[in-house]
Image (cartoon, rainbow, N blue to C red):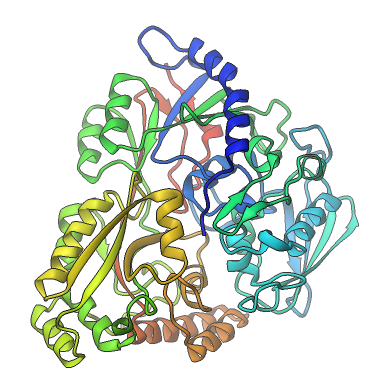
Length: 554
């Protein structure tokens, strides 16, 4: 589960940040707009943690992308795998051992050297994780990509995809895997596979996770001392005032140094408040622009960037939440009850579309011939009657205090979907919860949730990153066990030939939409906006925008 931050760490981080926050304010002019050395960016929610190895939320990963680097990275503004800390990478004849040639002369923010041994320290840290480090909410991406650990402490974990790391010399490292996988090397672009300073990891007890599964206590490294090689380095986190500050890494060697010295990420959870802060000059940009605000802001001269729709919004159905939900007829009835086109037309930005399956049509393996569930109230009612579920009551969770790329206004979306369900006779118990940690905790564990809305922005351009992340194993979010489906995922993941793998993804999409573990709702092109005098940032379908290229033009 996504657990609360430790109170001790929060207090320490806040105290450490107060002086810096005051300095940042002194850089601002009387009009409220930033100096040319400081950019203030409005974000929709607080980050969860500063160690991207332990993060899955977009705000934590946004900040990590500015401070850390990975062996490979997405091309700017796209999804193609390009050099990062590694200049090149090649597989052996079996496709299970990949050799990475590393950049030389790179240093971590603490002045220590980046080299092959540092890469192995990081991979061995993840692979040899024990105790609460094996919680699905502490190392979510490791488990999504690699599966298990050197010694699994949970029965639901499988064999680890990662096998070993060998430093052949200072700039050459071999990563060995237990099998051929679609995830290598593309998944290594994820911020969760960022390379950290071994010295800082040890000094600040990076793997010393305390507390319990429902109340994780993060170590000092994760809250106060993130140490990477990126163009920005951590300065302070003023949790009480909802600001996090990073500053330019003057010793950066991975390209041009950042053009703007200081960036302050300021949490403004309300969408309209972010818009007004931009117009008043209190901030210089913000993410997740409201669909109705895109054209007006463009008309006012603000720099609005629209990302390609590389995401999915879905209604998850937990088959353990209510026994009736294990009946395919009930799940089908829910699908037929939803007027998804009306939702897209009224609540999402131009360019959004109804989703036919759990991946966008720009990803190889999308299948135009899956079972479709077009809006049909009478069919939904008939299926509920046939299943003996005409008086069904369902607990429907939705998040508050958050905006996501696939979900611009959760309450509005919930109200539309809820009204559709009630129109076919399903009683809805609304359960609004704060996004983090309450909502993420409640919908990823246990059986207290029947329905909830959630989504996903792709990390790389392979179908497994969408459907595999959701459905390749048992997960509490969905509450089902389907061994035949899981086996088909294993076949697809281990298929090296791209064309053959795409055909297996098509088969998987067909099976998923027949089984119907949930209802795919929409794909949406989210927008990010900067001030009239801020340029240089390129929109990314992966939300991998690089703030180091931002600059003031006047």
